[in-house]
Image 1: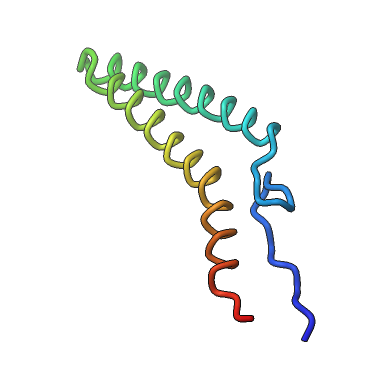
Image 2 (image 1 turned 135 degrees about the vertical axis):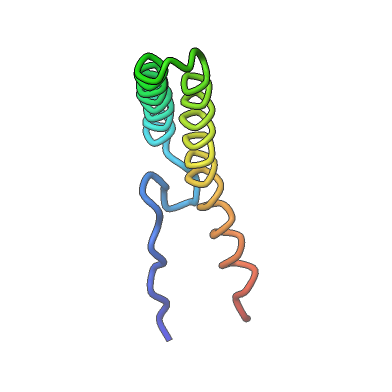
Length: 90
């Protein structure tokens, strides 16, 4: 029976590695998310007069969320690649 090619996540190559352009995109996504959440936190702090509370929350949410997203995008193709080769029968 012929095997159908497994669908690859965006930014991954046929050998399971993540392309350098996808990693550059992750860096840009990280920067934009932090700037956006810092701006939002600063705006909320000025609006509600709660000095650094939302600014720090914005840094943590923007940085943490984007780090988690990037981690999943880089690690998931490798994990999926090893799982599919381990479960093949001979």
